[in-house]
Image (cartoon, rainbow, N blue to C red):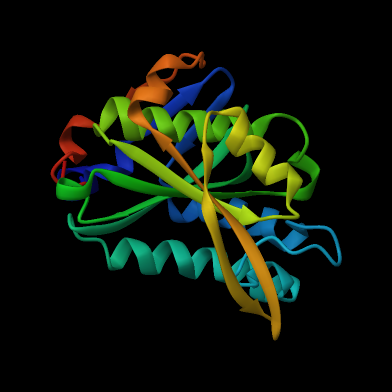
Amino acid sequence: MLADYWPLVDLRLRVGAMELRPPSDADLAGLAAVAFEGVQKPGARTFLTPWTDLPPLERARHVVKGVWMDRGDWTPDDWALHLGVFVDGVPVGLQGMAAASFGRLREVRTWSWLGLPHQGRGFGTTMRQAVLHLAFAGLSAECATTGSFVDNAAALGVSRKVGYEDDGITRDLLHDEVVVSQRLRLTLSRWAALPRPAVSVTGLEPCLALFGA
């Protein structure tokens, strides 16, 4: 079985009706279809890498290729986990978590996206809480970081709702324009003191060596 060699295929995070899991190729088809239909409203800016601005087919292929590339480049010292997000079995988006030198730094970085029809329904908060549980309770991370454009109120709202605190800014170029991003950080001690939903994690133990944990 593939899980004998790549146990991540059996990793599952569950919160109520939501399940997060590394997507199979069949799952990727569903997630690509969500991206094809749209991830941001016209004129909005969501990511520094502007993949959401691509035409629908290229946008869908970007999702598929991104999962494949990060899976192929995975090492215990440098990894990026893509978790497909499903609500009552329906694909709604993707939650990511990455780390470099995790065994020494114990720090992860999170990002995510949701299809347009699934935004504003609380899914972004729940999926972030699930992956933070994996990071802190499952992998013994010491802190988690993320970032959003300063005018992306929805993304910043999710991060602050689950406990992240401001951690400075960065300035970059996007389409030859200067954009400012708010960095945010959440420590283990702060996370442990905050109320949060119950998260069920299965299939993690065989994966720990792959995470450098």
